[in-house]
Amino acid sequence: MDEVVAIAGLNGVGKTSVLDALHFLCLGKSYFSSTDIQCIQTDKIQSGIIAQIITHENIDLKVKLKRGSKKTIQRNGVVRKKLADHVGEFIAVIIAPNDIELIYGTHEKRRSFINQVISQVNKKHLQELLTYTKLIEHRNKHLKEDTIDRALIQTIDEQISPIAHSIHQVRLEFFNEFSTYFQTRYHEISGQKEEIKLSYISQLDDDSYLNLTPQYYTKDVTLRRSSCGIHKDEIEIELNHLNLRKYGSQGQIKSGLIALKLAEYSFLSDKINTKPLLLLDDIFEKIDEERAKVLTQIIKNDNFGQIFITDTDSSRLESFCEEIGKPFKTITLH
Image (tube, rainbow, N blue to C red; front, side, top):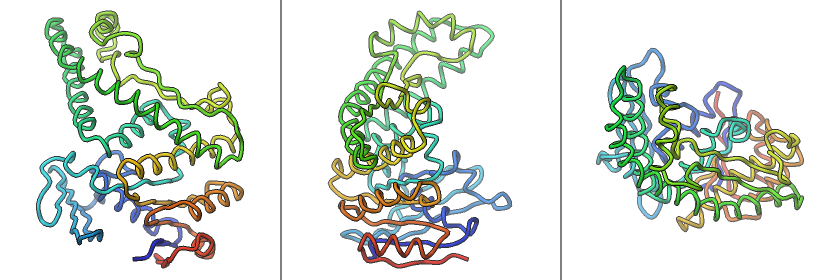
């Protein structure tokens, strides 16, 4: 098996789609599209992915997407009953240009990133996230009604409370552990000993969910949506006690972003005791030469698993593969 698969081709020929298909096979969803329907061509009814994964056994995986139907994932011909049954069996980490939203984007973007990392190694957490989301949607539906039954809202809150606190506790434990990975990677990439920190802020840090919801009730009725809970958790990156997004240089922001993704790789590797796929999408187009060299050295020196990398420049791809010294093959898409 080739340790590195280098995919060359001009923009628009489908390089990113190959990586996205690999991500879909591993996590059951697209990395680049927010909904499954966006993975079907506009003039088509359905789409899918067929792959064979070779580990200690040969595994046939199929993903089927069809308009108006629920997606299905088959493992050796057997349909997975729930997405949660599939997530965590195959692990992939992707580094792509639009990852910059993890720095510049909303807290929701960063929460989604954290949820995805934790859920791959904690199935209970994934199930709790799904249940919590359904309950909040149920709560929001009632808040939009002309006449709101406060007793019904209270009943829903009593169901939400234990789940919210469980998710909050898992996130606290995660940040306590993950921050060390992040700091190590940042110092490795930047060559600096600046103080880098992931800050996690939750409404549940200082009070219980059931104590907080009555305080937010009037606001909820006015906004017609739930404004209290772990879906409002905030995640920021601080450099020398200042917000990286607001005060960091372009170089510091790029270092922080790559550190975040490599920390994800290291964290997952340690938790699952095997090496995830590393998917690198046109990264040399977006990072400067100095950081490209550092990233190349990290990949060369660390113990990574199979790598899929795309680039528009085939000679640059070949140089990267030769530099890291791993067996590789190049595929050119036209």
